[in-house]
Length: 84
Image (cartoon, rainbow, N blue to C red; front, side, top):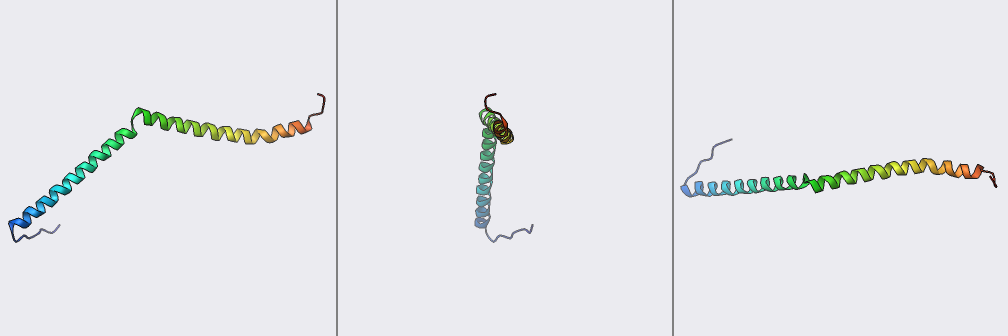
């Protein structure tokens, strides 16, 4: 990094003020990121995510089973003799 040359104390003060504001912005972004992480790791959110995954896994498995069983059941009904 190349060092800057200033011609007055006002330029130095201005640069320090800019750096101070940038530091505060970075700090606030960090705080917000930590809060979002805490929120996403809360028990309610984790439980909701687990429940959603279990539900999607169950229904995808259930759908696969139904897709396999329906043709077998239809074939069984077609081949079944009347009166038995």
